Picture 1 (spheres, one colour):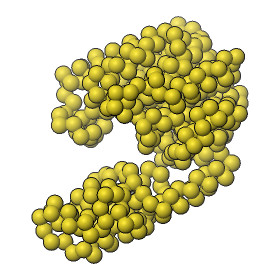
Picture 2 (cartoon, one colour):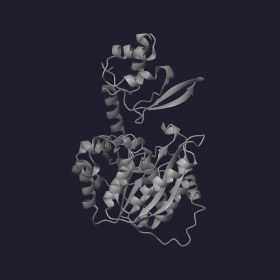
Picture 3 (cartoon, one colour):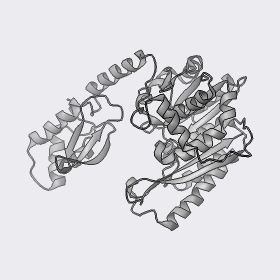
Amino acid sequence: MSENPQLRYVDVQPVVHQGQPMWYLRDPLALSEQQLVMPQGLAPLLMLLDGTRDAAAVHTEFCRMVGGDVPLDVITAAIAQLDAACLLENGNAQRARTAKLAEYRALPHRPPTFAGLSYPDDPFLLNRTLDGYGRDDDLNGWKPWNGRGLIAPHIDFPRGGHVYARVWQRARAAVLAADLILIFGTDHNGGPGTFTLTRQHYATPYGVVPTDTALVDQLADAIGPDAAFAEELHHRQEHSLEFAVVWLHHVYQQAGVPPRPVVPILVGSFHHFMHNGSHPATDPLLQTAINRLKAATADKKVLAIASVDFAHVGPAFNDSFNMDTPRRTALREADQQLIEAIIRGDEARFYDRIAAVNDQNRICGFSPIYLLLQYLETTAGISIAYDQCAADEDDHSLVSIAGILLE
């Protein structure tokens, strides 16, 4: 156990376990098979595990916070359990991370992690399910579109299926005409400004979509292998790319043709740019990556995709307000301003509108959309669909999504 225990990033969710309210500690990287639940009374412990205190100092501060004398062995036992589950940033977790990455790279392809959970794992049922989302979509009068960019949701299919279907059905001709597919996906667990690659192919229930490993290697050489692959393990559990690849493969499957190669890219948060006064337009790593992408694909017919959602607002996301009708209307207007900037290919305006309000609406497509627009450069587009999806049982919170095609 580390002398100064430091908690790794953990997704903490409220649950009821054996009739008691508890906190479930979910490791996004799934480094251990262990699943931990913690009594709510111990929750302050998590805030104290920041690497600045040893166990004795953590115990002293915990007792002060809760206003009572808690036995030291309760604290040390909890820390030991966190360590055993690889939830502390230490050698134990690093060894587990190294082993999981080696295991991932040894696979013939990246498995469809959410098949059988978020969508059917049977290809026939998957085909029927995805077709069903677009059954009421009227394509009469729609002419084949052969543009260069596509923005689609990565929300779960039951909530966002109709938006997925509308944009992917209209992008069909562009998908089939492309030599190469670039996919920029939100890395929900990514570090600040990361640009994370993988050489693994992506599997779906339909088969395997090949990754353009030669282009991945070019990009890795440009930005450095350490930067390119430091968070490669995030590909294993990240749904943003997986959901895009599933819909992409569905288009190929419907057409009866093999899928074209893809470059799956996970992009980390841009929040540090807003807070430290820097900007992605001048970030050496990101600009090197985008410039190399442009140069390496200049002679190819490329379809570039951003797999993203827009706003995350309401009590489910720690806001102090419910999303009533006036707030929904205001959000729609704010989202529309972002969509207008996207359609004009104006990444500076897109960035500035989000930064001006310190990303108060939590646009989880912030970084992938910005890099997509940088890659495409001058463009125009059309908004295909927009929706606000319930994010809690009371419909007091929502996630907004959109489908956009870019020339």
